[in-house]
Image 1 (cartoon, rainbow, N blue to C red):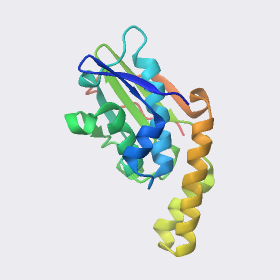
Image 2: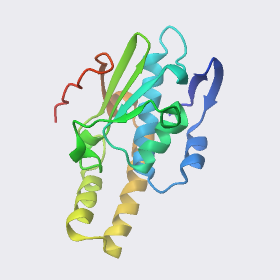
Image 3: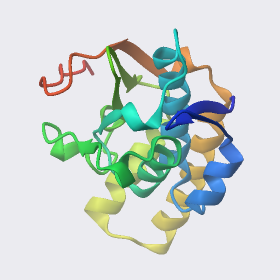
Image 4: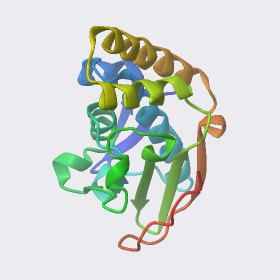
Length: 183
């Protein structure tokens, strides 16, 4: 885990994971951790020649849960700037149904990156618990189980390398339909 450096209209910012957690508040720890790590990977990919700048970024996400939204907004301000879009090609993935819901596409002028959470990078029990909540309802036992898995997933994601977490590839130009990711 590392801090993220980014420009905001040319002014350098140094963002920390702790700062993002303060901004988020802690309700969706798994999504926040996955998105934070995706933003770390995006920072590396999009800052090869010059430091990436918030004002130039466009962002597309498949899952728009509160943890993902807060981590992406904290780093990029894409929601505030109107440059965040939800991938309409994957509406069934919007509620973290599987690893495929955690896809992030970011563009900086002249370059872009697709980050897809790898199968197995997150415990299957997390996704199973989310599915059980949808199909069985929110019993107190399932709610406790989900809180446990959110914490477990967040800790695990923060300990893994970026290469272990994400498949990374160059993004097609903005406006092009995203290439479906393999399961």
